[in-house]
Amino acid sequence: MLNENERQQLAEKLAGLALGKARKEVRRLDKEANLKVWRNSVRRELQTVYELPNLGVRVILIELPEAKPMEGVNKIKMSYFFTEARVEPWTPPQAN
Image 1: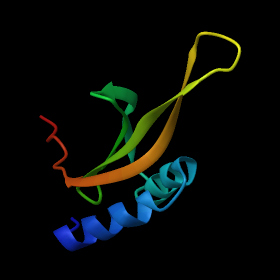
Image 2 (image 1 turned 120 degrees about the vertical axis):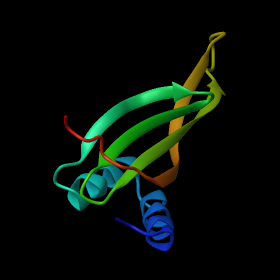
Image 3 (image 1 turned 135 degrees about the vertical axis):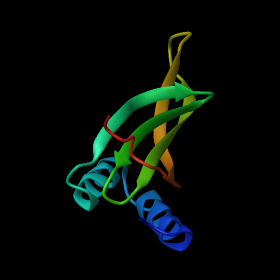
Image 4 (image 1 turned 45 degrees about the horizontal axis):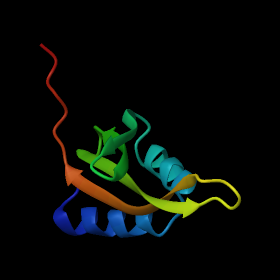
């Protein structure tokens, strides 16, 4: 189990990485890491959620959209950028 300070340090470390490297780092931290949600839209964010049972945390990787008009056509291109990592305490469900 990670304490509050360790969770904050992990979130800052992950936020400083590119999305692909952050995903690899999460899987490296806990070999039993479970990808719970892949790019789920919550409000204006795309969230990728990992559950790390051996560390007792849930890691949420946040991507935010950026709209850019396309030249020559009346369309908008949406791009998503990895901006934040949230690390929160999580207790694995008990098997019955």
